[in-house]
Image (cartoon, rainbow, N blue to C red; front, top):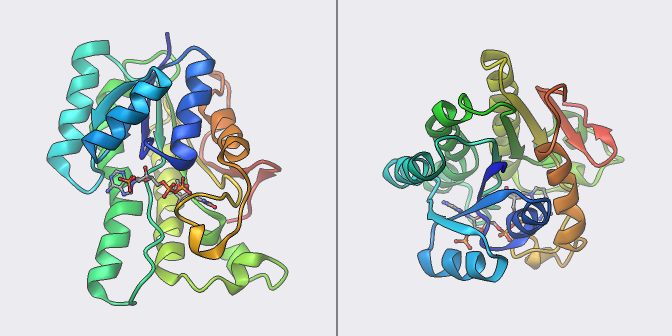
Length: 228
Ligand code: NAP
């Protein structure tokens, strides 16, 4: 059975990704920072639960240690946890956004690498954003051109870059970044935009279920590769 960890899986795109991967027969660990929300989601889905706050080294290490002792490996890691980081543009806000969206994926990935190396087909998916694409934010035809979210965009550009760097340094593991599509979740509630999480999760699931010959070091949305 494929052993999968999805971070930030108690709601939104992460929750739906977990649900669809469970349907495909994966043994899914719901990573959530809040025990009550995480346990509730895991119980609803019939998934396993690990407490995992991507900004907390001890929490991340303990979550991966739990999976290691139960499963002895990890096949699929979905780095999904993320925040919009609206509010003032200042140092503390920037540190918080980067700590969650960028350093968070590094923390989880570093803790997961030893378990991923024990998998026959290890795959890591970063749920990034086209808001972090230089091509999109400089293209007046794209909605990202007018997006007033500099910290979110910069943290996602860095998340995509880290994913590419991991693909280069870890040739035995597939690392791909994904733009899931604009989705109606708590993250976008203030804008009142987006499609159902079920649809966007399908884009994440496609990259989470690549076979051994699948691509690595790419940034994709549902239409294919997204320019950097
Ligand atoms: P969401 O419904 O707000 O879900 C975000 C998830 O991340 C929640 O489970 C949240 O947990 C979790 N999270 C936040 N900080 C965390 C931390 N420190 N440790 C662990 N988990 C944490 O938003 P979403 O739209 O599904 O977003 C999922 C991912 O998709 C994000 O990376 C986002 O940037 C990306 N994305 C979304 C869209 C979109 O249109 N919605 C588009 C492109 C990319 P709590 O419930 O505890 O807050």
